Image 1 (cartoon, protein in one colour):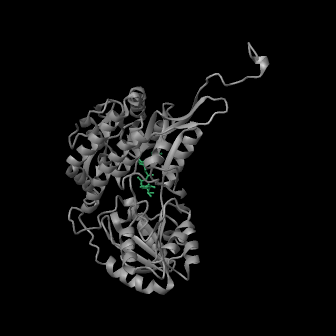
Image 2 (tube, protein in one colour):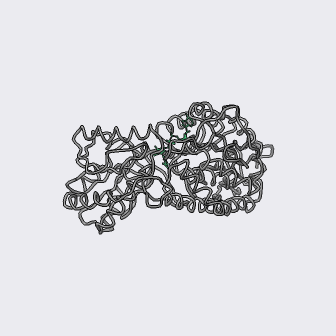
Image 3 (cartoon, helix red, strand yellow):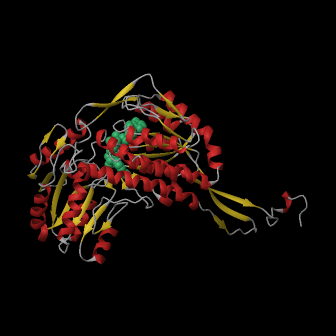
Amino acid sequence: MSSNNGYRMFIGGEWISSDRTFADLNPATGEVWAEIPDGTRDEARQAVEVAAAAQAEWAAMPHPQRASYLLKAADLLEKRKQDFMDVLIDEGGSWIGKTMFETGYAAGIYRAAAAAVYQVNGEILPSEHGKVSMAVRRPLGVVSVIAPWNFPLLLSSRGLTFPLAIGNTVILKPSEETPVAGGLLIAELFEEAGLPPGVFNVVTCSRDNVEEVGDELVSNPHVKGISFTGSTAVGRQIGSKAGYHLKRAALELGGKDALIILNDADMERALNAATFGCFMHQGQICMSVERIIVEQAVADEFTERFVNKVKTLRVGNPREMANVIGPIINQKQLDKIHSHVTEAMEQGAHLLTGGQYEGLFYQPTVLTQVRPEMRVFSEETFGPVAPIITVGDVEEAIAVANNSDYGLSAGVITRDEEKGLAVINRLETGIAHVNDSSVNDEPHVPFGGVKNSGLGRHGGRASIEAFTELRWLTLERGGRHYPPPFMVNPH
Ligand code: NAD
């Protein structure tokens, strides 16, 4: 176990320190919250090697036994819920309500992954030679999981649990912003659950070392698969490297999701979906609503009521339940958010509320008159900013929604379910919902995007497919005929 001031990496079942450390900041106060080992390529390699050495035995273990470790981890997570919530607040700037959701949801991921051990199915294929012909799944081997900071516990867990359950061993590299909630606390769960050494490992490092650590976690020959969740820019690098080495990579990247509000929308649903979708966790969700596209006839009513609601969202210390808007994760992100807002205003957008900040606390912001040439329309903002675009009809709404390099999730609000389904059918996204916000997830659903939002899927059966190799095996029983010249006893 590690103490609050002496965090160490978890490699081969041992807690390992590093020569250097880096500062893990509390974004609400700006203070150093913990010192974290700044791992290097050597430690990443060591983690890969122990994971490779542990893999065959782990894969050969009866699958109910593998599942039992995940179930134990889920129970322990629930037992230590308060520890996780505290860390998610202190290191991640999460509002208490978000930490309650994230810890509860994460325990469900471990249980869903445990159930996956019973679902690694193959197929019996017809054979023209009368062979027993099978398509069977085998774990890839060692899987590297690289995770982001915004839902660190949830997204690290999503990345690591399914590959583990189905017989892979794992090295997790959490984000440098949230190495404890997204990595080291998870290692404590598995240690307490009694997971065999080497099956699950955590390597931490600063942004300075991430290039070399990341390179080892992708290009080391023992690594056969990569689960990456993060920005499109880094995902593209990881995907290119994985492609060069001909390795599997499931890439969950950024988004610029649309919420379309049609003339016949239930206005209360539209307001709830927009407020939650734009402002939950300060808009720092890959599936946040980042463009509200509203039909002309209801635009004024929606905008007025939306701004009134947004003004009620309290900003401040996330330890207080009433403060639903906590800090932005770091200065770089805050600068990006503010530049999107101020540039849009210079280009003609109207600011209806927000647009200001104190420390890392950014006021929930609403902009109208937003147009495609503005960065707040085209680039991921990842902050508490709601750009509103008014359109003439449904066709224009679909065209505006699809006018994006991203394609993660979307929502459409309408009382006409048939029309809603027809609209989401035409959206260029991996995920879409009728009468709900774009922000939605469940552990067993195929989660992922198209275009710049990623490649591959996580969740349930999709994770089983992503992190197993599908092989063709046969058993020949005398039905196979070779050309007579090749046979010792042709007949
Ligand atoms: P990021 O890309 O900066 O970092 C993600 C992870 O990659 C971190 O662990 C980071 O340390 C690591 N990393 C950075 N450079 C690397 C390199 N050269 N080699 C290997 N690893 C490297 O993203 P972030 O700021 O942590 O997260 C925010 C982004 O993640 C947003 O774009 C958001 O939309 C996206 N996201 C996507 C999903 C999804 O499911 N699609 C979910 C959450 C977040």
